[in-house]
Image 1 (cartoon, helix red, strand yellow):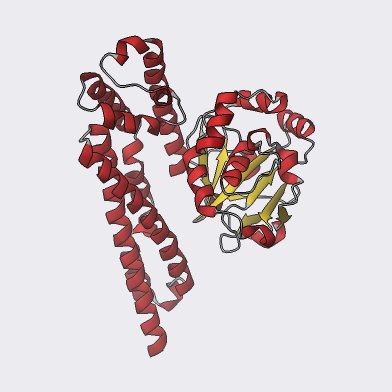
Image 2 (cartoon, one colour):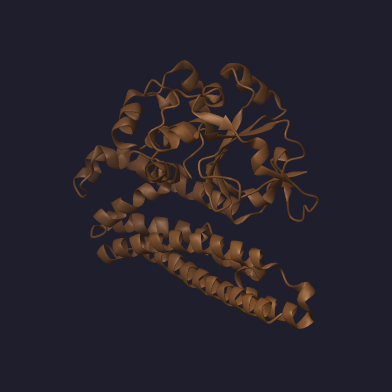
Length: 381
């Protein structure tokens, strides 16, 4: 069995996959490609991929691959890395996270019939509003980072053949996989089984929020004249990408009665969907990961043979610290927004980020203490 080695992966590596079903075969034929699905590595052991109902993430640790016959990993060649703006590319791809998946986009790509407004907005603002499939999930961020896979300034028309056969990339498949016989908690990627992971649950909650916000914006489009009298509405306000599009509108309209009604609707959906409590549940279902000190003390008491290698604690601390820094940035931005508009939606998100930051900081501190103690034991031994 093969699993991805996060130590060997690099951000923006592309995972190409070939499934055995008829739909996959049809996509491969239409795109002149060996593959019909793609995911992009974004670091910290996480991939982002376009699957219904919304673009989501998956953890490389949760899946295994029986063979490497139907999978390939490609990487931007060294010669092109200097001109690639990974920061801009990451900003774009994270902006696509939790967008609605659009099966119709596959047809529009083949027919080259994507709306001129959608194309122009992306080229001008790097903001995509046309729904997402996994080929655009690769091409759009790469374009934003300075690599035009289409080579015609048309990243929205890129398909799998363009990605697979692009001269920008080289294959690194065998170097990023490792073999294993330990499959505890892992799933065969090709079965597309649900893992019950935090990321899948977050995707389901995001779909509920997407639906709500789509309905709110749709109502405002239909009754534009009515709402224009009480709200300052601009055309770009009513263009949907993800549910988070509603946040700046809540801030702008917070002092109006309709703005507070929208805030209440979104807040209630945040709570009822479980979006703001998912990390709480994840933490308490993986106590050994987030609260290692007690488990380490128990292992130390039982004997050195029960301790994990120091590298394990160092790798975990690094991953949690990356998550902490990302969450703190979100917390800071949310606090800034909340201080300007004390909306219930922003308050709920702020509480979520603050709670998770505090917990991650505690976890990182515990891992640091464990690592220091292991180093002392090594010196003493």
